[in-house]
Length: 135
Image (cartoon, rainbow, N blue to C red; front, top):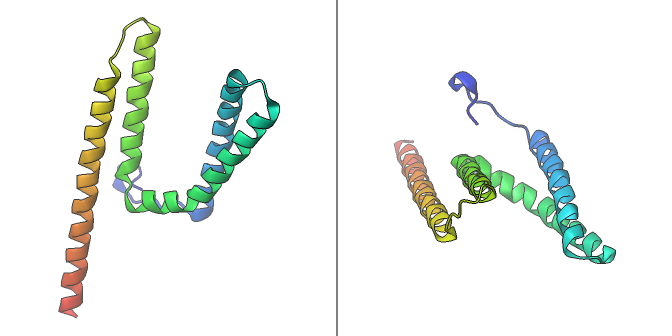
């Protein structure tokens, strides 16, 4: 991760897990509030929240590893959140935004990011191969 001034900032594994646990808690509360509005059955809400937290905890390490290898994916996710938030605000003011435009923009952005990831991985492999042939 690059901090202010261009210096490289490393996040420790424990800090990443702590951050994920806090986000899990926040999203679990959000899930509970959503579930309350969707079902009157408490056992279903409890099972849904426990299942969601379990999946998030199991996915935390692979996801953290993926993000560490591909830090630009965080900016892509932020862009998606901002686009969805802007759409929700617009619709709150009565402006209809066709969902096809949103999905097309997200798909195009994801495709560009996938191409960037493939390009970066190819460059890494070529660099590693050139280092191994020099030694």
